[in-house]
Image (cartoon, rainbow, N blue to C red; front, side, top):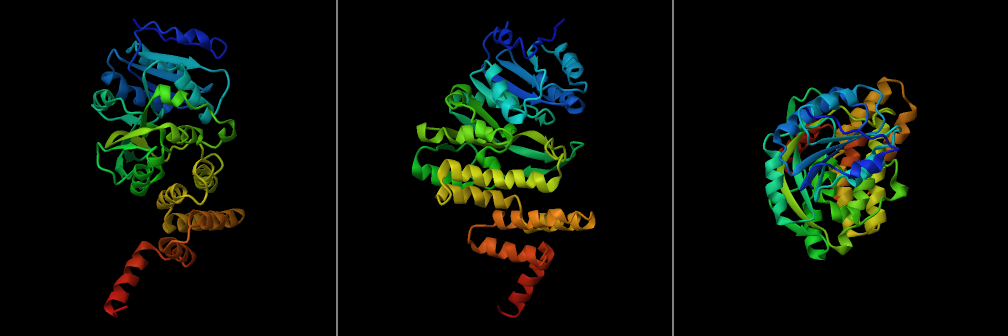
Length: 354
């Protein structure tokens, strides 16, 4: 019977001596208090695992039943390696640490509450034979009960298209095609990357606590060459409405995304660069006026007057670039013009010839 390979944070070096053969792919799962979900995650992965795949789970000191749930899964799969820290490192450190622990040539960061689609592992193992640096897949969105919502937009690139991001013209095309920040590595579950390339950059301590240290780490590989293979096809289902970073409310969570990606764009590419503008455009796609309008109404109804000024700041920041769309979106938010009203306005203008 398989047993759980467990190490405390004090004994982490012992984990490097993995008793199994060196894997081609490591599925890297950082987790904290996701005992209610990680069993379903592992149940979607373990039936697909082959001898050249390992599952590495880094537990940031969970206080729930995560360890027991993983133990039960490990009884059914010898490919699970579990490491438990005695302290909570936070997602930025834990993502870096779980990749440190991995032994595969490639790593697939995976959320402890998401579900891998059937056939995805075989697809990835076939795909990485092309030896590109980073593979980016699509994502199916579900609600917290994993009922399907729809496909998450990532890029307008063709499935299977490859981009060498060091090349200025190729990079410009990739950035233009981006639809959301997932194209710029915001969602860890959408990425499979060559571990040696990841290790070529160190963890930037200035981004600890931002949620985006992994994004900076990957984007900073571009000058030395980063060959990105756009899979496009959704390989996993993302559980929505289960954000670990909602403890300070939705306004704060939106600020982490908006301020974080503005900072990344400025730090990595320069605030006035073409790349930074495209990153900000993709970010704004995720926050249309209806999102802010709904957020404002929620804050008003709940009597959280202190949030209103912060929402106004986020609107100004999200739509900061002087594009026609941003001008219209600022007006839409200001005057609470809903999508339905925008449609009525467009039809009225067409009817009167304006």
